[in-house]
Amino acid sequence: MSIISAIVLFAIVWFMVFFIALPIRLKTQGDVGEIVPGPHAGAPAEHQLKKKAWITTFVAFVLWVGFVAVIVSGKLTVRDLDMFNRMGPATVGETDG
Image (cartoon, rainbow, N blue to C red; front, side):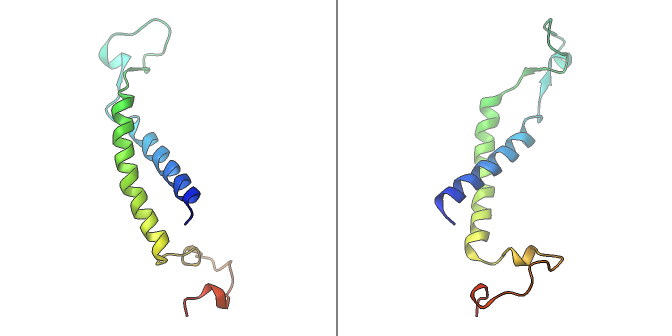
């Protein structure tokens, strides 16, 4: 795995975890009862983005290390994910032996 691939993989994992973490413990203006004129009542009153970004970074790093370990070890390949056998037989250069 190249350095660019590792960085792109981390960015994808980070954003996926961040989008999952955004609605957790979200307090909307309607929940708090302090609706500011203009935005919807479902707009966040306390978003805590900095805290969520740090938590996301930690969780994403742990997941990323797992993904990189699986990819670099070679235990799981693209051919293992080919459930419909669309890739055809492996050539000599693609096999372990």
